[in-house]
Each structure stands twice: as structure tokens, then as C-alpha cells.
Image (cartoon, rainbow, N blue to C red; front, side, top):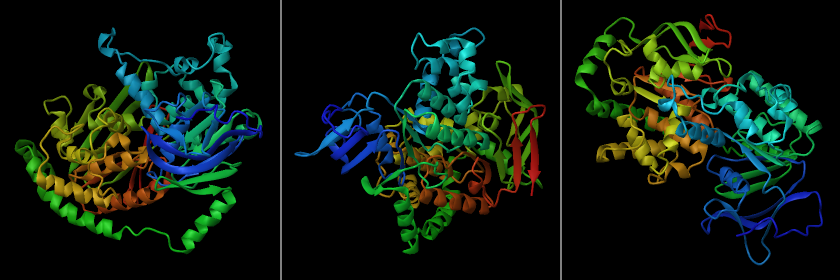
Length: 541
């Protein structure tokens, strides 16, 4: 394969990375068609395109520091193909994918069952950041690290001594950014930098981009975004990947003009056929789901349904904390069928913890008065009886599916009928036929046997959304469902969720920081804050 020495005698000293007639390949098979491109030192470049277009693959190739043939690599085409990268050993990628990999690593190394008190906090943010700096760095002095510019710039001072596994996704990504700055990297690649960030974190990121333009002068930046929005100032060039091909290369003004031309030519997507397919599937699935019911538990659910207001979830004076850090305090709240709720609040305010008390993924539920479908948790019901009535899209679920990532996407959707991570039942023909329709609805027709871990992060999230809705659940729990989705996927999913809410058979709990993703059906709002006692308020339209 190629390496950074191929074009060592470059004459243009400002050129830091040059790709000349190179494809991106995996195990000698071309995945992205050959193209040519140059990146200059201190440049800011934007990568755009649909989630399956090839951006993620391109980024993985740039981050392949050892040119390992088991990963994506740049492959020069003979006779003129060349690859030159002065940053190959000094590249850091900060993305939803790297954040997920970090939390996955922390969970694998969790020693709680062997730890006195049963809690292993794992690496703190401080320890993780210091792993990337020199052993003789003054940052090993606590007071110097607490006051250093990079810590301030990334807004992570308050979380330095907390375990990584207890940070929100937004906090983890800010820690990754801080570590990247302190590592001395020369090429920083940020993928979906604004996804899932609250207002404060977005402002921190904008301040970072401003600093990068002024006083952080020795760094080159590549930003990858699924949606062409919130573009930082100073972007000089744009690359667009579509269908595993470089479909545009040029400056940002020319790209904006191209987008306007496409819009004028009517390059928009009509999802009406997909939504009509959903209506057909909803009718079929309501009948199919009957085959997966536990009779005794269903009788209790039916009894609830005959109440004037069907209570799905109830919390009374809930308190959750870890190591003295209060996450939720004095929370009292009730969810009734048909009341679709938006859950909002800053990163770290407890939104995910709140949802995990409902899904059964947080053990502190047993120390609190939490009732799901009329059952107080810890009084005999199994988690499988409860999850039978839930569809879940969450960061945790995404992490768990990464552990069985070789599973094909048909099996992922089939597992939604059985509430399992991975598929451990025979594939019934009826369920397979239904799943085929859901895959077509989501734009995955003909890809039934594609491995889950071969998809981009956004495609994986789209598959998990389909998995959550495939059984038409009584309660649909959505924790930042649109992470990583491109504009077309996002539009389809939001329209689909509105359609699901309108059926009257599924109630939505939805966490998002993006005001453009708030659904019109969400008339009730639970707003959490970092200030506790009680630290929440309930709003209704």
C-alpha cells in the first residue's frame, strides 16, 4: 500500500496532504472511486454528503496512522497515483463513532463486580486527557490543568474528576476535543460536531472555531457534517461524497451555488410512498404483534387501557446520584397514553438517566418509586415483560449493538420483535416479509444481509429506529434519534414519527437538543436543569 513517503520531495511547502488518483480500499477492494485532492496547512475543509456517501470511510482512511491493510487505506492507481500525508502520525478524529468506542472500552474494562462498594468509576476525564500528553508535562499538576486554556476552551473543567462512563454524550465529546488539543495533533477531524450538543456546548464549540482562526495557528481542520448547516466561519473548501464517489470539490461559495441549482431543479425527495407503506405496515404489525404477547401481563395492560386516562409511567420523588453527584432530585412525573412528551435540558442534566429509569437500564430504579404500566419496579415483573411494550432508540442501545456488529440488518430488525440484542430465534417467513417492507421504507431495500458494523454511524442509527418501531410499541422512547442522520433520512424519520404518533396506539418520549426536530404532536415538555432541588419543570401547550 501507499505511505506518506511517496511524495516526500514536494515543492509546495504549504501542502500538507496530497491525494493524486487514489481510491480508498479495504483489503485490496476499492470502496471509494479514485480521485485527486490537496489540503494545505492551516486550512479548514468541510466534508458533506449523505450518510452512505463515503465520508465516514474517507475519514477512517485519514485516521489510519499505520496504513494497516485491515482498515481503509488510500491506494494509488498506476502509473501516476500518489499519496502524501505529513499529518499521518498526527491526526485525531473526534466523532460520534470515537465517543461510542470510548464508552464501549470503559464498559468492557468495568470492574464494579470486583470493587468494594460495587462501583468502579473507571478512568476519569482528567486521567484520559493526560494519557495523550508527555509524562513531563506540567499538566500533571492539578491546578495547572484546571486553569489551562484548552480545558477552558472546551468547557470541561467541571467534569475532569468524573468517570467517563458517567458523562453525557456532549460532555464526552468535549473531553475528546480537549484531549486532541493537548495531544499536539496537527490535523483535527471533527465529525458531526454539533450533534446532540446543548446551547452552551454549541457556543463553546463556536468559540473554539473562532480561537482556531486566531490563536491556535498550528492546526489544520476537517469538519464532516451530514447536514449543510451551522457551518463555522473560515471554511475554505468543500468535498462532497455521494455513492462512494467524490461528487464535488471546490470552495464554499461554489458549493452553495450548486445547492441552489439543485433546489431550483427540484432535487427534493417525496416520502409520501414511504408513509403510505407505514400505514399498511402498522395495520399488519398490530396483528403480528399479538403472536408475541404474554397473556397474563396483557390482561393487566388491557385493564389499564379501560381506565379514563391510561397511566404508562409514574415517578414519585425520584432521587438519583453517583459518588455525591446528584443527577435527578425530587422528580415527580406521570405519563399517560397519547400524551407525547419532549424531554429537554442541558448536557449532563439527567435526560438519559431519566429515560433509563423507564427502560430498566439504570439499577437505581429499584431504590425509587417508579411504576411502569402499573407495576412498581422491583415487585416481581420481569424487564422483558416491560420491554415487550417499548421501542427504544438510545446511545446505550447503539453501543450494545456495536458489540454484535457482525449481525446483518435484517436480524437487527427481527430482534425488535423479541427485545433482544442480536437474534437468537429462527427467522420466521412472516416476520422476514414484514422486515423487508420496513427496510424498503427506510431506503435499505436489497441490503438485508449487510453487516450492521459495515454501515456508517448515521445508517446504523436509522436501522435502530426501524427496529424500535417494527412492533408498533405502546411506548416509543427516543434519545436523540436523529444523531448522524443525513437530511433525507432525518426528514423521513421525523415525518414517520409524526405518523406513528397520529395512530393513537403509540406514545412518544423524545429527547432532542435541536429545535427543528421537535414534533408538532409533542404538547408536553419536561425540562431538566443542572440546578437540583427539584431541578425540573413541566410545561404544556
